[in-house]
Amino acid sequence: MTGTLQGKRVLVTQADDYMGPATLDLFSREGAEVIADVSDLTSPDACQALIEKNGHIDVLIANLASPNYTGVLATDLPDDAWENTFNMMVHPLHRLCRALLPQMIERQAGKIVVYGSATALRGLRTVTAYSAARAAQVGYVQSLGVEVAEHNIQVNLIAQNYVENPVYYPPALREKESFQASLKRQVPLGRLATAEEDAKFALFLASNDSDFFVGQAIPFSGGWIQR
Image (cartoon, rainbow, N blue to C red; front, side):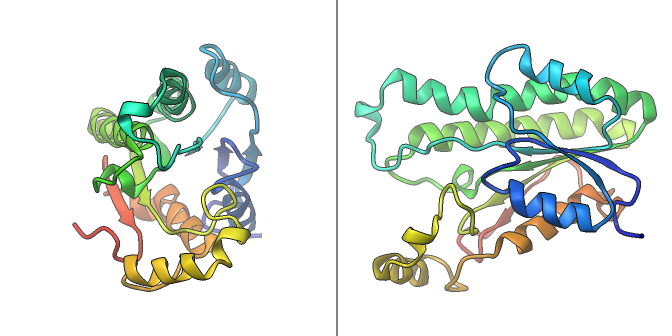
């Protein structure tokens, strides 16, 4: 069997939702040994324990999602909602990278791909906690990317929106006429990306074909973000 990731060990977090299932399927078909983690990573020691448990990891797919509390004004946003987005999407990202990078630096090779959000790149009403957490991911990736580039480690983020996934765009929502109309207004392509299209982008960033991409937050949104 041959494939883009043949012989690579890939860790995918939150593997049972968001972009996890599509990533597991595609990466496995491309020859990777995929470690599908579904554990709670919000406790301070969880990420270190996960990396120690699984040993050699060539690629980290930081697939981290949380409720986005859409429709809540900043003046009405409670502390627990604000903190939850950072506890689920920001703190685990740093802890995972902190635990994993020493082995990648020792090997002088590694890939870290973050499934992020285009909401970090465009202001939207009533999603302040979610947008702030996603923007923190972007800043982290930009800084970390240039920090570890000299070690032949590439860290990049997919700034996505309007991608099929069970967390943010469940089938019941996609079937609504109002959603379909909104989709055509908001997205120049007039459709959602398939989960496999997104996973293929992650596959590129996880492969040796992306070695010259450093600390990038790359829009993947059908034209919703242009920059």
